[in-house]
Structure formats: C-alpha cells, structure tokens
Image (tube, rainbow, N blue to C red; front, side, top):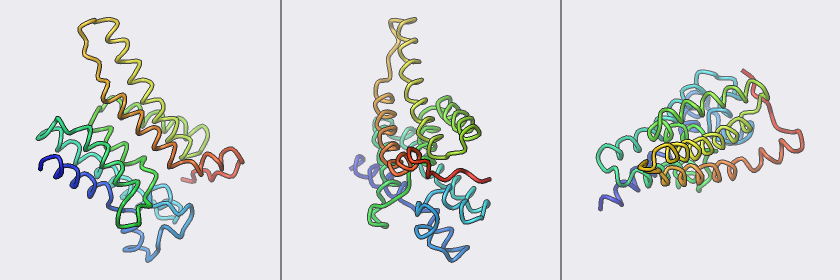
Amino acid sequence: MEFILIFLLSYISGSVPFGLILTKLFQGKDIRKFGSGNIGATNVLRTGNKTLAIITLILDVLKGYIPVIVTAKYSPEFIQLSALIVFLGHLFPVWLNFKGGKGVATYLGVLIALSVQLSILFVFTWIIVSLIFKYSSLSSMFSSFTVMIISVVRNGVNAAINPDFNIINDINILLFIFFILIIFTHRENIFNLKNKKEKKIKI
C-alpha cells in the first residue's frame, strides 16, 4: 500500500502542467501551440512574459522537490522510486496524452532533494554553458551529464581514500537514467543543433 501511495502521489505531482495552466489562465494561450510547443519555462519565456516563465520554473522545480523530500523523511526506502516517478510524471502526464515537457526543472527539483551539492553544480554548469552558447537545450544536456560524471567520480575517489566508504550506486544509476531521459526528450533539439536551427535563449 505504501509503495502504491508513493507511486501515485509522485506521479500526480510530477504530471501537473504548470506552464500550460499558467499561460491559459493569464494569457489565454495554449503553450503547446506556441514556440517549440513545449510546456516548460523556456517556452513560456518565448511568449514574452518573464514573470510567468519564472513562476513556471519555480513550480516545476517544487513539484520535483516536494514529493521526494517528503518520501525521504517518511519512507526513505522508496526515495529512488519517488525521484524517478515524479520525473516520469512530468515527461508523460496522463492529462496531456502522455506528452509532457523536457523535464529539466523537475529534474533540478529532484536533484535538490537528493543532493544540494549536485544541484548547485547543475545550476552553475547550466548558467556557464548558456552564457557561452546561448542554448537552453545544450546547457541542460551538458549539465545533467556533468552531474552524473561528477557523482560517479566523487564516489570513486571517496572509496579509494576510505575503503570502508559505502558507494551510493543507486543515485549513480538514477542520475544515469535521468541523463538518458533528458537526451531522449531533447532529441529534436539535438537535430536542430546539428543543423544549426536551434533557437537561442533571449533574455
């Protein structure tokens, strides 16, 4: 019963399409018919409303953070399940025929709940790459890859220094799955980057 409850709450939380709800409520627009068609904060920004984009970003982060941190407190043995399902909820929401967003903000929320240090690394890397190349998609993919690699290296170094160190393999596997899913959701962006058709960030 606990497994099912955590599964459902995590999925429902992750599947709430805040970008779509906010743009319909305050702009009368269907964000899926605008810009890239994505329901995330980056596409909301393309509508020209920075405030709504920021609110969407915050809410998408929170919907990833809250269920995972609650699970960590009350049912820590299911934290990996909650982290993965809330992320999949955003990617494949039942309310939108399983066509959700790219998952980056929700990924960040999950990451904050799992490791504040890795979340800071993600944000720092994202900012640096976006300032250099001006591509949100490239920044997201490179940052998630960096987080995964650093997590593996960190655990490896700790294990080498201290033989009694307990390597957290679960989080490394989870970060790998997240990275693969982020690559999957950005497959069109990868094609556009390759063909120099990707839209740059305009702030």
